[in-house]
View 1 (spheres, rainbow, N blue to C red):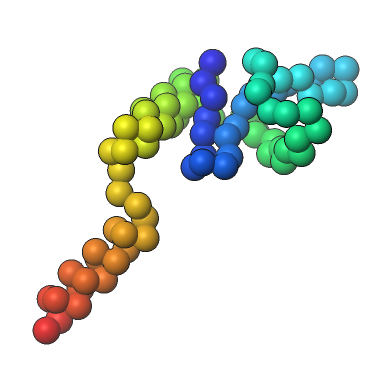
View 2: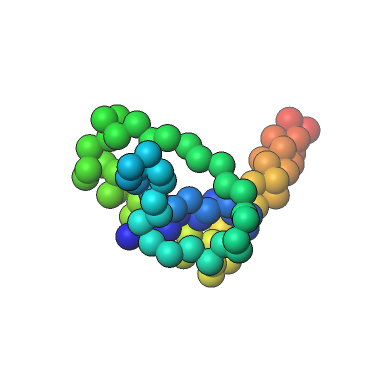
Length: 89
């Protein structure tokens, strides 16, 4: 099972509805009383293979981020602006 992570402060875990309650697919280390937001994933939009491929790519990206093998979005935008300014001079 893949735990998806979004930046430092967000992560996604899978859950299923059982008897009207959400049950996590794996244990969590969240403290008691932690408030979470839920997003319902439409199951008919992606095939199982497509969903697995996306989850695998997210896991690869998560590993790259953990290794520091990424460019900060704001730094990248600054680099693009600087290139554009240099080419218009």
